[in-house]
Amino acid sequence: MRNRNAESLLQKEVVVVVRQSKWMIALFAVWVASAHAVDTIQTGALINMMESEDPIVGFRSIDTIFPVKTIERPEKPFRFKEVPEDLNGTPYEWHSTKSTLEAFLEKTKTTALLVVKDDAIAFEHYALGNDKASNATSMSVAKSFTSALIGIAVEEGLIKSIDDPVDQYVPALKDSGYAGVSIKHILQMSSGIGFSEIYDDDTSDVMVMMGQVSLGKSIADYAAGLKPDYEPGTKFNYASIDTNVLGMLIESVTGKNPAQYLEEEIWKKIGMEYDATWATDNHGNVLAFAWLNVTARDFAKFGRLYLNEGRWDGEQIVHAAWVKESLVPGADYLKLTDHYVPGWDIGYQYQWWVPAGNDGEFTAIGVWGQYIYVNRAQNLIIVKSSVDPDFDSRDMETIAVFRAIGQALE
Image (cartoon, rainbow, N blue to C red):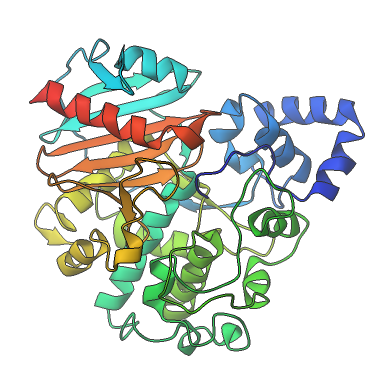
């Protein structure tokens, strides 16, 4: 999910029904804080979390709202060295206003900030009840994990070419708007599918999608019912359902759901310290576009994997050519200058955002302020999880803060 103000993640009709009983909302708030894993999406709890001004508890307890697949950690974890630095007073300037890292973390309601410089943790900050063992939900940061899994499937020969039409591998899409659409154009958010991603409009497609899924519809069936809107490969149109189609592709060619494939091909190979979870619909379909729940340290390890062009301590986990290709916008329409706000200079490629510049920066971004940022020139990885209600206007400022951190550590 990406870059729009959000009050709800469900259809207006569902919101109205639940709002009719205020005591139910209060009950759900208590329930979210204390409940255990669930078998079906808890519609009321989801509404309560997404409409809350401080969805902190829900964001670290997604398995009390969605059914999940567990991604198990290996027996022997990798741990970063620790070389702590006091970065709280790090200055930065944004729109002629000077501030500090500490003030930025407070105003963006940051629950975790982890800075890894030269393969060592330089700064680790937790707040609002989170700690180093807390799983923070990814929002659309999950999309970059899904992209990595596609790259692995290509290298294993399970996908012959990303220029192939996706319905060649996913027969359920043969009569949909995805028929004939290349995997590459889906990776680039230029599938041509008719899909609007506007979070403050209850009638937009992303809202309708989550409304239907929360009420029991299969997200795979939802994707199969979509229609084309424009010629694929001609413009950028951010559509979370595109990523979910990539999840369907992974399952079709591997025989494993994305969570299982992630565990086998990445999680256990790069020494993640904690179990993770990935939310599903009520039919067990992994929601590949979001809701991957991971600790800050383990998010940083995924950043390290891509910083090192898919290698992990001598083993090539994701093919280097795939990593390189994933991080350079492949067409002019993917450079996205001024796309969201004036001054926006972050392009897009295979489910990754690519800031303009010469430092080899790239970042995964999720709404409410979730990031995995990598600066290859500085050998720097930064993970940020947040519950920032003003996330919509913060991406460029956040990149400026990350760059200031990098300069402070040089």
